[in-house]
Length: 388
Ligand SMILES: Cc1cc2nc3c(=O)[nH]c(=O)nc-3n(C[C@H](O)[C@H](O)[C@H](O)COP(=O)(O)OP(=O)(O)OC[C@H]3O[C@@H](n4cnc5c(N)ncnc54)[C@H](O)[C@@H]3O)c2cc1C
Image (cartoon, rainbow, N blue to C red; front, side, top):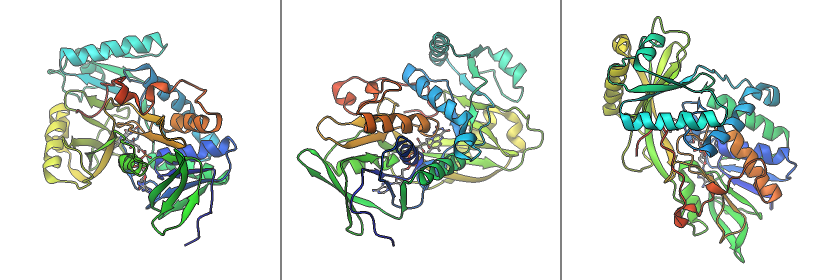
């Protein structure tokens, strides 16, 4: 294997969508000698399991701003990166099954309107009329955004990789970081499994669900926990309507979207944290029952395969971005709680500003600082596709 350089300006740990986006934007800003270390293959972590959803519907201004910033990049992705991200703006439909969930959708719509964004609140009868394949008799209503949709995680990952390589980033697969060395309260070097060391003043933790383990290397407690989520894919379904939105049932944390000529169906999530990435039969049964309840025509569908991935959950379902005050040079970009793919362009941009300019200039990311949990300054996001 090629030796690593003896020093770098920035070392990024993790070759998922977050790590490669940060690598690209750092290089674009002219930060030299950026080395990204991925212990396996690029995208082998959560990014490779992602459903690709992209939405503006969030409950907090900061999440919506991350979406808007990222959406601009997805819209001209092919132009900038030479790779089609396969963005399909099919719309996002959240469904509320009780008054509490309906209140969340209403508050959310209000916030989005104040930010100049279009969102429709729809009654069950209207849902039935526009999307006749959905069962609505147990719903209070829904909220719909037509500009949202999904893109290809693999394609976006490849775009960032291609862009980062073109700008001189060293992307290394099969390199596991096993230790981070400190000197006088700041990051000094990264050590890898072969025993090699790379001296660097800046380390970015982009290790996804494994982020807490990487933070522990510098003695920090990072509140990111892994949570297994399973997804299932159906066989071809005849007569699927061409415009088929991403549908999310808030009550169950269940969702579905079109995948080729069939459907992608969200399976259950675990209640307990673990690094287990196995698919199980009970999950398939749960998925079939939930899906049939909401979409009765699925009686004719067959589940062909499943996969399991790990969410990287933070206590308030917002990303954790920045450095802890006690350690200089250790930058976290973690805890994306099910929306790291869609926010990856914004994260790359903002983290590159933080490193190159000392602060994020495009928007204020202080609310996402890592120490907010011990300060009791949380910003809760209820609009997620999982329950905890
Ligand atoms: C089932 C499922 C569906 C999802 N759907 C969506 C969606 O629709 N929309 C959305 O926006 N998000 C979605 N997400 C979330 C999204 O996939 C993640 O937020 C995003 O992929 C996180 O990217 P990442 O780069 O931080 O993590 P990862 O992709 O996990 O990358 C981290 C990398 O770090 C590497 N690593 C870890 N430790 C080390 C080490 N010590 N040394 C070197 N390398 C190391 C790992 O091998 C891994 O490749 C979904 C997640 C799941 C599980």
